[in-house]
Length: 325
Image (cartoon, rainbow, N blue to C red; front, side):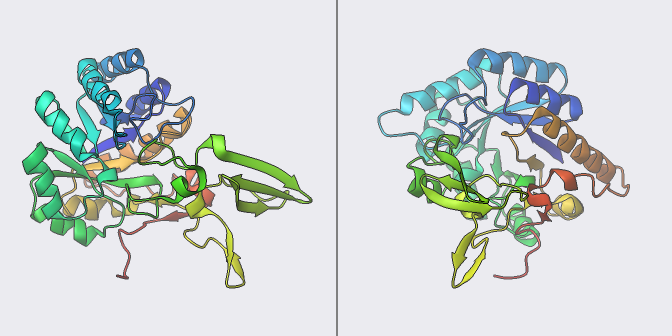
């Protein structure tokens, strides 16, 4: 299975490639990608140089242009597709139907992947995207069990890519409006979920209070860790009880499920983390490359190496092994 790894900067891309990534995904430094944060992402020149470096070391580069164009401003997204092809990208990762149609017509030789932001969760819709826009791979949303992924792969010839490590969004990707509600900035349109420009920390007595867009998200004591104020992982009081109403801060780690994912017909394994440091990227990629190589060689897979890198020091297999429906 191909290991697809994150790169928020050229330095992180080099670290991922050196650690054993088969492919790296990244985006331009603008609102065409869903990780549009200050200090992250690539200029056109940086992308060209980084793709050249990756190719010299046998790795692919996939460019995420996975937000939804604003009406009247679609030229920015059109230029991103053209610039990705010009830079030598091995594929673009797209979500918007209009942008997919544009790329299909104007850049027919550029390989197209369907972003997780499209939330394509069944074979019928995946086959529609393949027939209409020639997509070769779909990044599946993180709401499917392994059995459901296996069923999808039996009904489509499109390659499937699944997340195996990193931040776990509790919403159906491409459909979340929480950040938009709190800050006016949409992850699906502006590329930012809980943008740092709307985050404020205040000391109130013994507590440190974290707010997002004026909403109190966390209140912690002096010695307690202060999580980033993301709405879906906020701590709220409901029916007299205080806790993480939507989701506990935890990282997805599907290392132990790699054999089942391989048996289910998965083509590629995706690591989340374009906002992470190059040291983090290198450690996670190296660990997963060891696991993928061990699986391919029929050897026992390494376990426990990534516990220190999980959010809140907690890990979960997410929806992959869930029992409820």
